[in-house]
View (cartoon, rainbow, N blue to C red):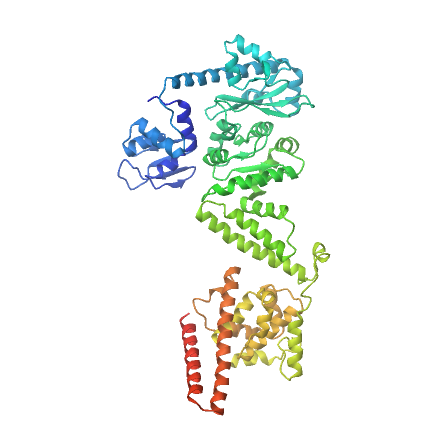
Length: 640
């Protein structure tokens, strides 16, 4: 069976060589290529190389090389038609049926390629004759060399100029319509030129063949500033990128690909030394274009204007990219100064300014995802608004198809939202000493002073006990002396206090629990009261600041005593480097266990009083049961 070249080209475009080879060979990245052990010869040192940019593989062990079709033929013992059938099915492409018209259709494509070549030659000749068009290109800063390299031209302001030129070259009106160069229809008596009084930008396929045009109007009153060819047998605008054929080699050499929004931007950047630049064809980035970009570089840099329209375009790209993320494959975003596109930036500030943006001012996809939802939401000043933001972000992250990438996004999202919301709540509460003006007018300070802690301190003082939130000003110096002679501290009590010392932010979220914490060791109780006092005084809850404050109050040896207490391997949440989510979960678990143990001891004391008052068998069984429960809890704690 004879397969049309267009089908073979489409299979190569949709299936990277590495994807096909990876079914037989374990590949590892080696610079800009991938390498592995030869599937055709036994070897210990990898000598099999794959290059997706070139669409080829080479096996030094056997001397074989080729494309995806030859690899499948050699590795699976298939004939060429069988290999094409196998790969077409994998690429989701239907095979052409065997009919007499197949050859005729391929001949039609050949004629259309020839017609497009004739059209670009006509436009180039018209540019040489039109001073207005040349002045426009000169104002845009495009050099003669760039104009010739990109084969720019001019479509004259006449309805039939191109039509007559192509007819004289032997092309039929039907071929001109099929190529998209004429506008025709049942309600149009005579077909006419699609492009008139426009600068013409030829669009090429990956082999460099001209398949379509983009036209920039010179008339300021034209209904469409830019006009592209329609879909044709040669051109599918969602599957190709402007300048992709030339950018592939440069992208391979530099390890990056730059995506901008316009034809002139591409040419201006290529002229300034950024040959690895492409652009979509007047539409938002499509899935096919994204896959094409990833064949050229693992993290394309998407450049957008810094204005509102540029941000909206970037936010649309986020939705396109998310479902297709894979390990090592993502995008970066480069936002230019507001009011400047890449062409303006190059002309006004030079190539170095653009290089600086690429090197130091690109944003990863995750950051732009967060910004997108923050800008499009109603705010985050209330719990309901923050819940809405979280729900929207989680829904977007859930669209990521790859399980591994999705898991990493979910983890970073949890950590980011937790840290962000904690910071916001601290601003609302004014714990940093000054309230944000944006917040002060819309939210009251609900934690100016924790009245519950203060009320308990007052009540305990009235009853003659040392208040839990007592002032630190009179902290006795003997705290350190007592600490040195103290008995071993209860392990779980020490663990809870050490967690607070290493993660003081817990005081804000759990001040009620901390205040109610029953501590049998006086040094730990003193330390807990000191921490609550710092909270009540709006002292910064940064770890080093808290330790400095405690030391100035003569509690440094008590701190050291708490930190020296025995720990278990399961207590990693108390360490300074533990992640916030782990700390939160570990604190809640340890606190719950401690409270349960305290409750058991209180129940035991009550049961013993009941036994003394009435020594019945039921009362005794109750005492035994509580003792057994306490022994079990101690055993679990020792094994943790």
